[in-house]
Length: 227
Image 1: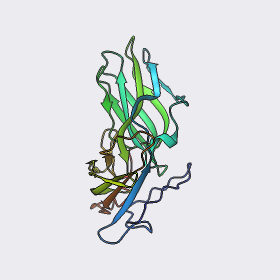
Image 2: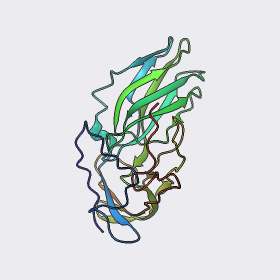
Image 3: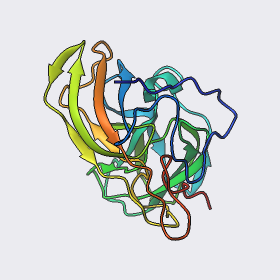
């Protein structure tokens, strides 16, 4: 299996509309091995811890001790948001995927129940929030890992080069155009092996380069929502 590259330079947008192939992919059906490195365990307050939402606002200052792009895994991962008490106000995360493509996701708070995001962020630029009195929020990253191309099947998983059962794939979403609440256009993967920052995780997968009737899609999926 060929390995998928992850050496993109921050600050550029490498998204390719209707992308059909690449030198790091096998033949038909398109396949490859994705290495996630050794991603850390999910962390509910790695980005913001006890951020007050007593008044509506935004922040671009995050916890540098617990949040870095390296901890987001090579292709990003989903985000989670939870309130300290009863709240149904909105939180929006604005950032970029591993390609440098601008994106944003909207979360409706559900009190003390974590709201699990469906898009894979690599870089976080801003978090905005509506007001709920006497309430704080935690924002962190979840257990779902982003993938480099649109994945339609996971054949097997490896933990430190040892074969493991395949985990769970959240299928890529072909909604066009994307919205602030649609799932990731390339899909998300939850490993069988719980990430712990030490174990190296890899998967063998099949990709799909389907383009819809409007000419959108391809290996990089539908363009992310960023309005």
